[in-house]
Length: 184
Image (cartoon, rainbow, N blue to C red; front, side):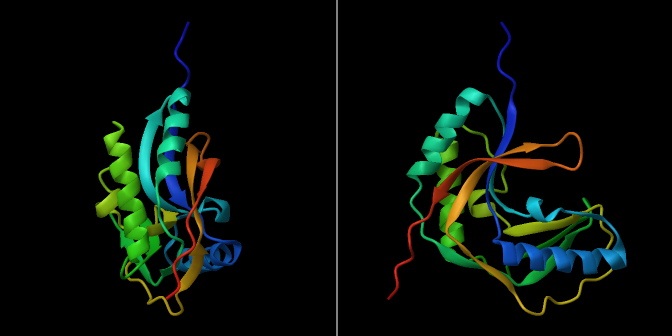
């Protein structure tokens, strides 16, 4: 009997429809100048923790860990553009990561590592919050992002990625609600 097929998973935030549309329009404009493979609107996300390959029997444990994370909802505002030339990644991100985002990513990363998951080193405290807009892009320079692109983050998701056939596609396995932020 063979072991169940592994799946590639991560935890992420998904923009709402308005933010996704704004990000898509921005991407079309930017790649019209420098080229690149544009991310589909349904693929736009901010990764909180990349777990990698797991067996289907590990999914319930990941859901249990995420379900125990206590974090508050928050507004995420993408207010800068960036480019990683080594990988040709064009992205939108935060000048300053909001404290609730940092706390959520750190709590999730800490709990995953404590359970024995070897998550990507760029998770938790080392997270560079960004949404990938295009791959294989070429950018000599980037314009300033005029109006920030924002959405209210009220949940995060456990997602399975399928890399083949390209482009990558994503399937949400579970969603986890964030607590309402305290209003003072």
